[in-house]
Image (cartoon, rainbow over all chains, first blue to last red):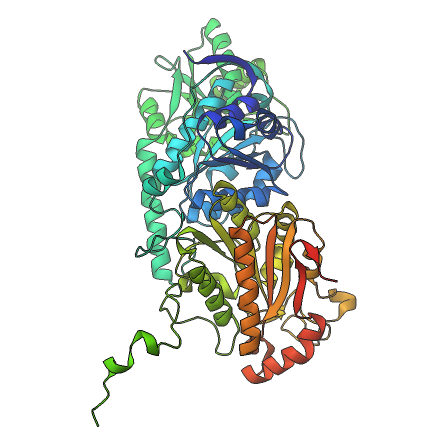
Length: 361
Length: 262
């Protein structure tokens, strides 16, 4: 068993970055995720593994530092919260277009604009539909516990390098700030420069004499080539949809109704499911772990088993609910419930919404 | 008299000039008369002469030199507009023993990338910045740049730059020289053979500083022409540059070995 610790979600993510063998973290402070860089600075990862930690002048600079280092084949990450993640979108688009691996976290707060520092899940569209310009996707992992804040850093780097794609850990203010027991995975050694050069021949590690130079770019002025590049990206995303869907089904076997939720909303909804079951309501929880790829096929299979109604619970005005609707294709009623703007819904509110919006009709 | 063949002439002892292998054979995308081609060449010659080919990573900007990676025959990363110093910081921090440089124009470095430029300089990143200043946005068709001179016409200052409403040209090089993180700051030109020799000497010093792990950035501005954007012949543009750009952007070293030149 790995080392057990009581940690905040943000701290677990930071510790996991060191243990995942990350080469660098570039970040900029913003509530409610500043503990990530604070923990890293205090922990002196340079002494532990040689990992670099740098506070950039802005989120824009931070993501471009990630772009540069990722292009050179290193395991690098950044983190921020909603307004800061908006600033990073240009860089994310370049990283996706250039097919570079990186991990970044968004500890979501209420918006729009400067919004509030309280938890929210209103960045779903930005995360899953492409927050920056162009036809691109990123893998989105949604942790629902401090444990997953740690585990998904490791998983995120594995997926990022397997597919050369940005991986977003889409957390929220609840998961980032709350303390839980976490079992930390053992230290993974950082790759040496030689190992990086050998393992990632696409990376700009310095052109050896007589070899082809490496170019990291998202530009091609020849539209035919650009279309081909886009088609290549779409094929890659299709492979990811086929192979990387992750989710958890709780009490879904006999369920007549299903609540779909992710992150802290899934935790709250799980409690609502327990309360509903006590009242004899056959309801289950479909917890999303990957938001992209979205488990559309798995939802359709549940449709075939006769699910009568779906309730999408999220701390937003209704974003993920659209993907649930697209997935179940009208097989049953789909409604949305969620408090937002920094308010966290209670299990009682979720249960009431289930009874009124789904069962009551 | 015996006939002289091609093979008789092509001998090492007869070699007077050879294009560096670190420039590709691709035809430059720059307008005839533009200084970029010369600036590219001397940067690549220095990398070759110092034997840095296998450990150098260059960062290309957005602007006329966005395609620098097509011509520079080394590992290159193309950066978003203005972000080259941050991209270079990322690379250098994870590869402190490699050589990293940016090649940027004035719109990239002194307008949209001002923050990245100033903070990379202020942190004293151990990189080289090559800053080509031609006082105009060339690639997008001749719009006003942060370095466009007062009264100078461009497509977005068609009646000349009015400093009252459009602000003053920014002397970025003098500005960064004030920061403790810059180690070597100089302004050069590439419009005459003598100027090219001086510029090349400065670029050599800049890269040597990085090789020798000197504390801070080496920043080389090259004042250049944009005959297309300025709507002049190449010869006229060089004369205009001497008469107008150089008085405002005087050539010479501004900071050497971390000390401001008096």
